[in-house]
Picture (spheres, rainbow, N blue to C red):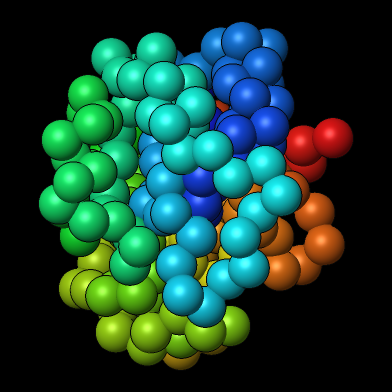
Length: 189
């Protein structure tokens, strides 16, 4: 299973376009979107390339590949303009073929969320971990900072944050790739 994982576009059209170009290159099985897709929210500056209508068109062009969750900046109106479900606080994927490094077995559960309802307390994500099996991965956004580590407070749970496509707070616009049980980052230029 090959996934591309993006988060926190915040209506930044030129960065979303670069993300779309990367999708053409990577050719994932599915595209995971971890929320905060269209709006910048009251805590963020407005991106220079802020154009949510362009981002709507870009994301709707891949609607058949998208699995999305709700971020803290999503609103009911977003579901009216996006052609894929985007209002659930979490989703769960199971990769039966991945080697689970924590349990030395096959299969990894991926718990997909934004990071404002469920999280491991890393950076400014909430410390409210869902009940997950050993070897699972908490895949979240919200902090705009990349993370790929085993959780200190939650043994045998991997935490992965792809960073932010539109408004990074760690210096680089980025997204994540998951393939065969391995998470990695890709920077957008």
